[in-house]
Length: 66
Image (cartoon, rainbow, N blue to C red; front, side, top):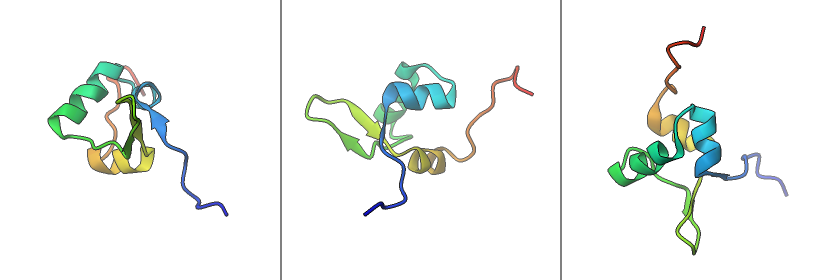
C-alpha cells in the first residue's frame, strides 16, 4: 500500500536539488543542520526531501536565479 511519501534520496540528489555541492550537504550533517532519514550499512546518507526542506526552512535561491 502506498504511503504517499517520496522515496529517500542520496546526498548527491539532495545537493542537486538544493543547488549546492555534495560536500556541503555532508558538512551540514556533521554540523547537525540537517539529519538524514537513514544511513546505509556503508555509511551513506539517505534523505527525505520534505524533512530536509523543513529542517532548512525555505531553500536558498542562487543569486543569479530570477
